[in-house]
Length: 116
Ligand SMILES: [Zn+2]
Image (cartoon, rainbow, N blue to C red; front, side, top):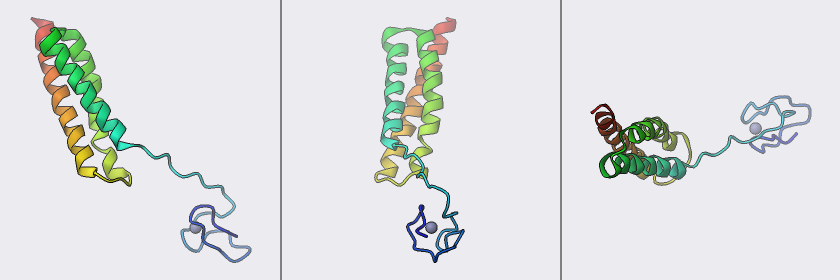
């Protein structure tokens, strides 16, 4: 009985893998890998769009709206590198942090524009 999760060769008749406790008669599908580069990149990209909307275009409502989405996404993105196996964890965390900063600044200024 080869374990579908870890590949350990268990003796015949084993129900739970002796190596990782997986039920050997259950198929194993590895958790979908999230790519922190994608999330961090999106966080920064949205942040840049938000800041551009607020400071360059002067669209307060757009900046506040995109900034709100960007803040949520960046907040999520900053946690992704911690939960996946990847290189450059610090870089992606820093990028997501930058995304948060840009989105917050753009969002706040967008709100000021929208109400004035
Ligand atoms: Zn196993």
